[in-house]
Length: 112
Length: 435
Image: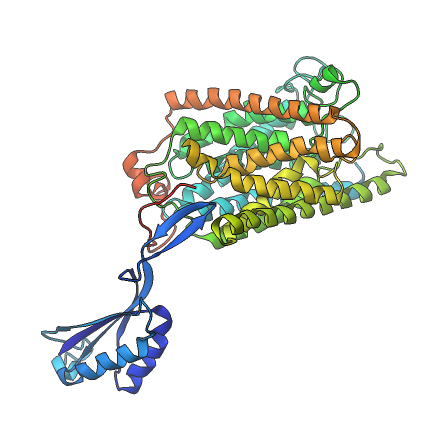
């Protein structure tokens, strides 16, 4: 099993969710996040005083998938979240040792 | 007081009272999320303290018999004459409860205005004690001097009468008593308290501009009570000319109030568009307040077109003036100086130029202008001296500042044991440039 984490533009979230649902991904965890990469931040001006705001609002989504599905899920997220402009985000994958479904006690693949 | 007039003044008193919670929102939105409750509590605290003081000796010091003797145009009223509002109640003698109601709301908001200069760092206890002493030594005397027949009124023996015969100072609703007074006090406190930790280096951007817009709206709404409720009949009660006097003047004051406000908002936004590239919501809210401040003393003396001019000038100048604190290094956190002192000066002095009767532009010479400058300077000096003395005494006794650690972690928790929001806001990085 693998944990796929994606940090994407907030306005792309709905498209990504729909694409993943269509690809058979049944659930995921989403958090509002802030951060920056190449996009950097922006400048805001309040009563003439300029502030550099380095953090950009992002959506961070996490989904644990079967090894066989990893490639497809990553590709689905990438194509749905892409605008081609700086700030589209990142997707990364890390191994997961075990999973337990709390309601039933099922483990690993059965719990996904 | 005519019953219709009385009904309007009672309504106005309620409108003006709403301005102080409105101010709490206006200021609260501009602070960081960790100190919004303390900011709002300084306004609410002022309502508590000033109301008690006003009932006990404030009304008497403002509108009682001059402490320098009957009919003297002195500096303050006798605080003991109407102590606890004894003797107040009928219109004929020492004023009515309706007058008390209207005037107490002015004393409250003037005190609350000062709190914007000392955001994020002030001990709540010291603020409450300051409110009681400041309103006693700075506000009540100026209210007496300007509106209670004292030294800055048109009375014989007053300052104006000593300079020119027959030219009375004009301050319709409080350019000197309210805005110059609060603006100077804010500057003095900002200097005595010193800057916030990280001022000019860390980002201190507003945490909730919709609050600030909401507050500006409530202030705007209440301000129609502030200005239009300040109508003083020029004919005796019961006179058949009263209706025409009331309808004509209150209508003009209302229209002048919105005229100046609209023009000031546009002026402020214009400065931002040209200087910073974008017209901001904070600029709109600030421009509204700047226009309201400037037209406060002038609303009974100008034409609607004159009010447009005054408002535009106030909007432009205040938008530029809020940058001064970075240049001179005083932390007037929410721009009490840039908006209320500068706006109050523009309005008070502008009367000498734009008044349809007595103004320089209307071919009536410069006497009114000289008088307006003199009363403005007198108000600046009075407030500066009183506030400095009070602020230094409190600094040496109670102390003004919360501990550094509490300031950094957020004053809401250390002073009030509360936090405004469940989750702290994120974002921000080093402050880049000044103004």
